[in-house]
Amino acid sequence: MQKLVIVVIALLVLCLLLRLSIGYFSANRIATGLVMSEGSMPTLSGCDNLLNCTASTASEKKNRVEPIAYQGPDSEVIKQIAALIAAQKNTKIITQNTNYLHATYKTALMGFTDDLELLLDNDSGVLHIRSASRIGQSDLGANRKRIEALRTLFKGKI
Image (cartoon, rainbow, N blue to C red; front, side):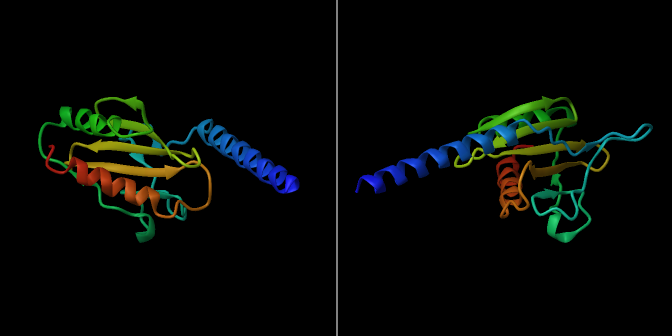
């Protein structure tokens, strides 16, 4: 019985250390899909051939979602969506300006840090969106679900 208690305690300590190390390493990586090219408008990378990323700029169907359409003043779109994101649990706005927003989401169980980026396309009246996990090979659909949940929250706001 005493050996069983020791084994259980050792497993709990290992799980705790694993959780802390995963959270630490994913939080300290900088992940951004913003592509700045001299002489052209910024874009979000398409994250094609990645299983842990979903974007409206992706060319492959498995990674692609539709951008978020909006109506209303361009100046209010990022502000409105930033307020929706900030109201969610385990989120942090990293960068926000008039046409770009970068936020992070921290998963509750394992402490993974995921990045969400939005880029306003004033000419076409859409908000391009990209959500990507910083570590791991697959996100099990979490990034697509995050985007669709945000789309639902945003619908009708602008």
